[in-house]
Length: 155
Image 1: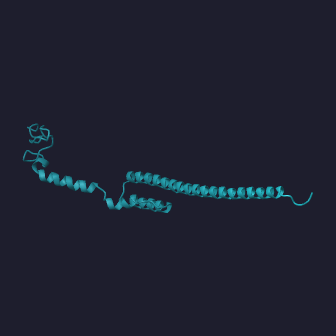
Image 2: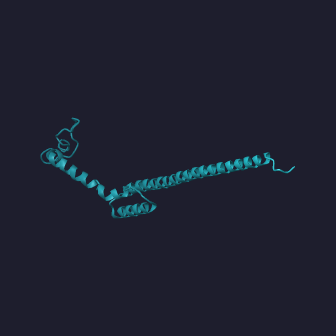
């Protein structure tokens, strides 16, 4: 007798008999209340999702190392309050570290580009100065040679 009523009389989605325990109606709780099952699923889903707005400031753009420190402090507080899970915070911290390293490299690359531009400008100025000096030397050599070709009136 107990063996006959130990399973729900309904079939599951695959067409196999439902293995859940039956209620007095012979159906399990969820087959007796199919709308309630969907509602409970929605409620559970809403509870398990974290709000996007609370941790969105952890993903804001870094402008300086100070903003990275602010981001990490905010992330620490969110983990402490339970707004962000530690696993998510770990990933965000790694992304922040990567972001800081990229920011530092970008600053260094920009500085190198500025220095290269300044070096090119200095080379141009040096070449122009050397050209002027060469012209002066040529003019002074030409002037001294031309003075030597003319007789000075002395024997």
